[in-house]
Amino acid sequence: MMETNEYESGLNMLEELTTNAQQIQDQLMGEILSRNAGTEYLRRFLHGQADKQLFKKNVPIVSYEDIKPYIDRIANGEASSDVLSAETFIGTGTSGGQPKLIPVTAESANRMTMFNALRWSLVLKHVGDIDEAGKRMELMFAKPEVETPCGLKASAVSTRVFKGSSFRAILPKLYTSPFETIFCPDTKQSMYCQLLFGLMQRDEVFMIGSIFASTVLRSIKFFENNWQELCSNIRTGQLSDWITDSGCRNAAASIMKPNSDLADLIENICQCKSWDGIIRKLWPKTKYIGAICTGAMMQYTAELEFYCGGLPLVSGFYGCSEGANGINLEPLCKPSDVSYTFLPNAVYYEFIPIEEESVEMKSNDKDTEPVDLVNVKPGRCYELLVTSSIGLYRYKVGDVLMVTGFHNNTPQFQFVGRQNVSLGVDVERTSESDILKAVTEAKILLDQLGLILTEYTSYGDTSSTPGHYVIFWELKAKEGNNGKELDPKVMEACCFRIEDSLHFTYRMYRKENIIAALEIRIVKQGTFEALMDYFVSRGASLSQYKTPICIKPKAALKILDSRVIAKFFSHKAPTI
Ligand code: AMP
Picture 1 (cartoon, protein in one colour):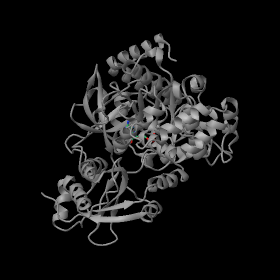
Picture 2: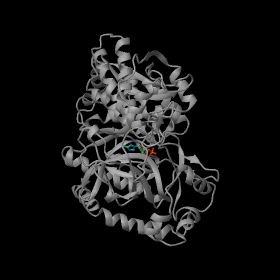
Picture 3: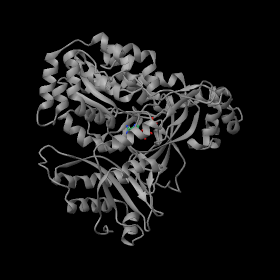
Picture 4: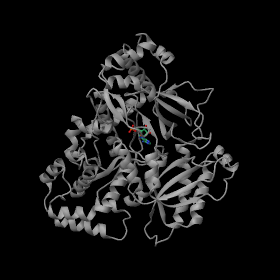
């Protein structure tokens, strides 16, 4: 349990950080430059001087590909202090869908732990009594380390946090998952055991969550397929034979005892006809679901709400492996209203103005100079740049954010989408947020069929001319659906509604037949799970996994296409 003074000092720290944002950012930049001005990378631009003005004038804005050669040299064994940063080693990140090596410092994982404590303070302020805060049933999955060519071990940021001594110290007291289950290399065994331990401690569970909403939903579905077996294990006090991981078995051996009362109770709950609000019934003291539900994760909120029976969905933070950190000061607001307040003490932020939040997301020619954190303007969209002691300088994270206001002197941002994720079959470009908005409009029509859209992704099909957009949908029947079928008329209307909600260029090209009719391909249930398994097998971290809004790899497309059960096309051109 968190001590009252820890909780208060967390809230005080937030006030202090957000009040003195500019000063803290300046000081941070001073520290980064004085430590790293002598590295090969910065010497090229600053000639050894730790000067902020020179930094802004000379250091180029870069993407991952620009600094990859430097990172590769460190991964190949060169001393980081000569190349990028005084104290960097190599970790892995996944932003953008592909696993990649990124520089990290020991400090970055500690910062994350401190950051988590701040988030927790805020949640406690809004949700319930601090003295009643029980355990967190957070589903956590460490990812095996990757070995670099010279034998260095690189791990994902979430894995480094799980390994950190401060996290290990609080784990047994604050979380339901034992350490061994988080580090079990088989994700199915890990998920099974984490659910089992969560059920056994159901009366203590205060929150249920994971980093991203998709993982929470995936766990609920896994539970749906495995609850009888879990109950049988609880009844006998024995783990199923297929759980072969020794860590999981040891953890279970130390706390599992036969408990037929609990098994009966869970069975009763799960046997009821409707699973509406099942989470509340299984874990009656849960106060909220903690998982990122903004951006690409928004698509999971409808289904999560169904299972959660009115529990608030709390998107606590915005973050990425490269170090950007924003915190949600109003944890109870709806996912669509969430803004993240940036913390100025870990990363030096700059923002490239973006003309508007939609369409091609071209930078505004007149006004592309990056601005500092405190100088962003409410209502405007920006692409985020980070500079930090890990050795990234003016680095494009690839995210677009919109300023919604200020807390004290620190801006608050809504997540808009990934900058470079775009769908296109001709010269038009459709951004992630365009697709998100259009699908959100269209899926409302599924209500009349008693269906819920559970997952989707998109693909630009250019195998014939003109090319067309394909949206893959995985659907699920709502309670009381009474076997209603996919009505082609409604599905065609969904295709049309997507097209009609897309940007002007798309609609015009469609009208002129430069783009052919949009297609929705319905895939079998479980398809997106198979897609995730594919990306995880290729190195994505399960804890940090996000379904790509736009599919590019052919192998991933094959997984989707081989599971298509119905196809529908838009029947008329959108309005202009
Ligand atoms: P990773 O590289 O795995 O750390 O993923 C970081 C990326 O996840 C960010 O750059 C965002 O694109 C996305 N992300 C992180 N936090 C949020 C959030 N709160 N809302 C929407 N997307 C997020």
